[in-house]
Length: 147
Image 1 (tube, rainbow, N blue to C red):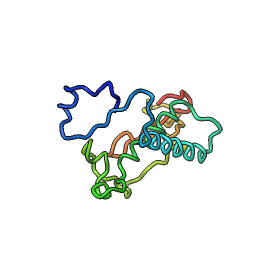
Image 2: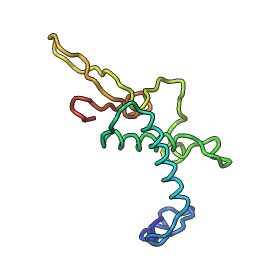
Image 3: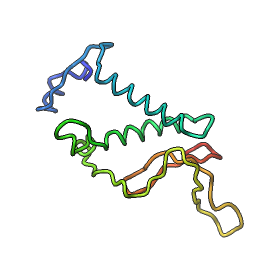
Image 4: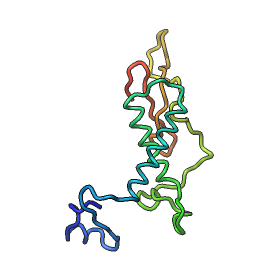
């Protein structure tokens, strides 16, 4: 944690947790390793996409999606082999890999509300990430560049 939060009020609010304060600009190996891991995952996912350029929205949602996914998967310690960080902190259920997933960066045709006239009933879009556990997704409209 940042040393700025090392106050008596803060410590009493999270009693039972072990906190190690660090000074500004101090090397924190665990955090730096997590950042490198996330950057590498973003690079590998970006390199596998068929697009020549990515927008800021795509990059932002890619980082958010990868972070959510990483927190939903169990890690290597004893308890954590069975329970993910998102289960402990947010109370989220295990990921259901049997449900349908839309791959990040997939080109999609997304249905839009229309009046009963001849015209487009879908918009071209690029899949971003899951909006919720029920299967809804965020998409980027390729015509407007907005989510």
